[in-house]
Amino acid sequence: MDVPGRWKDLDFLLNRSGNITGPDFEPDPAVREFLHDSCRVLCVGAGGLGCELLKDLALTGFGNIDVIDMDTIDVSNLNRQFLFRLKDVGKPKAEVAAERIRSRVAGVQVTPHFCRIEEKPIEFYEEFHVIILGLDSLEARRYMNQVACSLLAYDTDGKPDLSTIKPLVDGGTEGFKGHARVIIPGFTPCFECTLWLFPPQVKFPLCTLAETPRSPAHCIEYAHVIQWGRDRPDEEFDADIEEHMKWMYEHALARAQEFGIQGVTYQLTQGVVKNIIPAIPSTNAIVAAACTLEALKMVTMCSTQMQNYMMYIGTDGIYTHTAAYEQDPLCSICSPGILFQVQSSMTLQQVIEAIAKERSLDKPSVSYGAENLYMHGPLEELTKHNLSKV
Image (cartoon, rainbow, N blue to C red; front, top):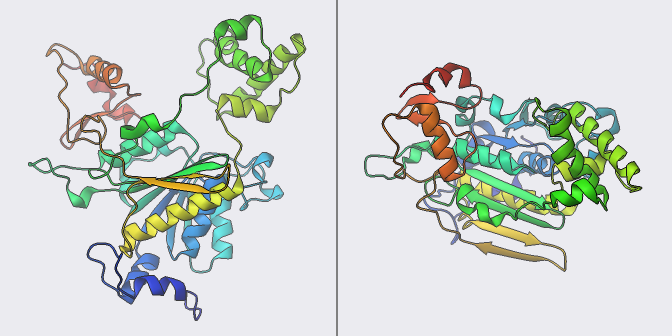
């Protein structure tokens, strides 16, 4: 970290005052020391966007980075996930990415976590100053949003306790389109507040899938929606389990051959089942740069924060737009609380089911004050005995 001139450009930001600095910003060399020595940032995802984020964070001066990802490297990743090589196929993405960044950027500590985000306890996420999401899954984003908002506490006047805020920076890409957004629980809309921004997934009529398939996607969806439940009724399909995906591909291929349809491949099967849109490396680079800049501004206050959602479109030329979306006062995730009436005779299990149905939540956790009544995930075994209580 002592190479002369290495942080010249960063020092221009951190050692000088200006007209667009954030509130309470004080130019000081100690800010860069904090950025490198004390600040901890978590990168969730080590795929196409995650690789760019890790590179940008390391080269921006963040010295302590953690990365979490449950996937292993596939040969199809190599065209855009530049931290990986052919020899790395089959290895955990998080571990390989961490090692590659450590070897290329001197002085940076990168700690990998090869696991699901749900496997980490809530205390794990409390350790970080900022969390950056480089995910391609709506469900994973919603989970991390719930984690960050669950850490937020309110005082007796219903105002957020500033010491409990865990800021998120969320990035996402779809082909030549992308977005970067800032989520400050209690002050900006959370992910759930603006769920309407995400278009609904394309669905095919069941009659077409069952009787008159005309495309490879129809054959894949037939295996996914109909055949899995018929042949393996006691198992829940998990697209992240390799054996499940191979089964899906083989049966989709057999269905396609039966109807004389060509084009079913393993990669296409993954794309249809996971609703994957082909990734463009340049889009990943642009969105990752925007996310990293927002993380830097959060930690150092060297400039005013994005307000609060930026979208990028690169299909016809280059177009960006920033919108200041507003919080939903009735949001069940980030609001101080909303009234929900239940009968006093209902068990906790029945209350959870009613809340999930009313608020369209998937497997919600319930707590009262500092006491966890029921926690979905790693703490489920310790709290599920409360489900039968009234």
